[in-house]
Amino acid sequence: MGLPFFGEMLSFLWYFKIIRRPDDYINSKRRKYGDGVGLYRTHLFGSPAIIACTPSANKFVLQTESSFPLVWPSLEIVGATSLVAVEGASHTRVRNFVVRAINQPDSLRKIALMVQPRVIAALDLWSRKGRVTVFNEAKKVTFENIGKYFASFEPGPVLDTLDELFKGLLDGFRAYPLNFPGTTMHRALQCREKAMAIFREELEKRKKFGVGKDKFDLMEGLMEVKDEEGKQLSDIEVLDNIVSLIVAGYVSTSLAIMWAFYYLAKFPLVLDKLREEHMPIAKKRNGDLITYEDIASCKYTSRVVEEIIRLANIAAFFFRTANKDVEYKGYKIPKGWKVICWARYVHTNPDNFEDPMCFNPDRWNEAAKPGSYLVFGGGSRICAGNMLARLQVSVFLHHLAVGYRWELVNRDAGMTYLSHPKPNDGVEIDISKI
Image (cartoon, rainbow, N blue to C red; front, side, top):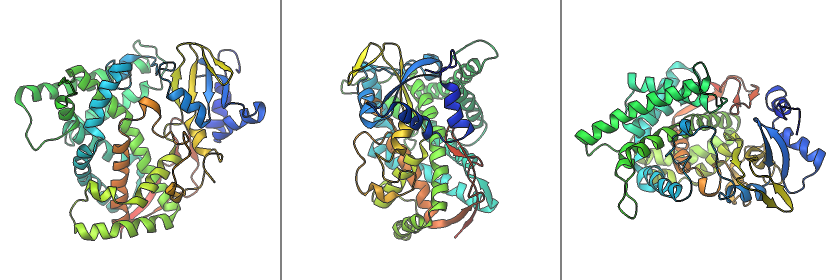
């Protein structure tokens, strides 16, 4: 369990931050205690906890939400009516609304066309600069597309303000839940309140004046979508879910795009295969935007995307809390203890993936072993925007493959693993048009 008060946080930081070999944290436990049933007792992030690091153990936890709910230190920061906060029938209802608005083919067709102008413009600008840091630049274009799709906001003062507010809000998710002036949590909640006010003003305008027929965005979708009984989301449900979805997608999408540049620069044969797949589409479109159907037809691209997000391990673990004593294969998980589903180790364990640290899209010619692919979580809380995330990376891959060449400035850059895995330089590249 580790030291008094600190628990095993010093050991965790040693592996993740000091020697930067994060998978050895779990390996050290396996060497000391054996494999057992894939559960290890610990004390991390201020609480006694059970680590689940095998597919079967994670599947058990993630698919038994009645015993292992998702508990937030502060509902205020995620929004009490947001998809990530509600439970049971309320969660099913809100999830159905959100999935229809962002993750179904009809929505994805519109999104595929909407995001491309900014991707095309960004890549053109990067090539004229010559040298860029991909993570920083990807965040800019990702947030511009989020602003456009979520509320039809164009680049300008409002979007710039929202960008700063969400940076402050995201800091609160890693902060100790103390809410008084001067704390990170207090500032994060203030940022959330101000962001909500901006979206609320836009929502009220739409209710009063309506929206043009040519406008389609998430806010409009959430305002209009109805369930089987004809009921609609309330205003606060619309606003809470817009804010929580931005939090979920902003940094994670930017990181996935960054890793795409990194791995394709390291594995040029994969890039060659992508070009073979996308050049005929580009010629057919003759300068027009590609469609959702074009992207869906690119089977090799789909495998590349899955491999990028598997190795990126953007969400290294998921947290649940036992609301009662639960037995698993003869071991008791005590009530009130956190359960940490260690997705990173599942993705990097050779028991689950052959040569797991090698970037190999062809491994996806066959389905992953059950329970071994957790990039979007699992159970009823699997990411509601998983197809949207895949789409955005695929759009980038198309325009990269057909129009640009690039190389890493620091091919041997060291890695940082907290708060998210990324090369120390944020993937600095020299980029030019083909």
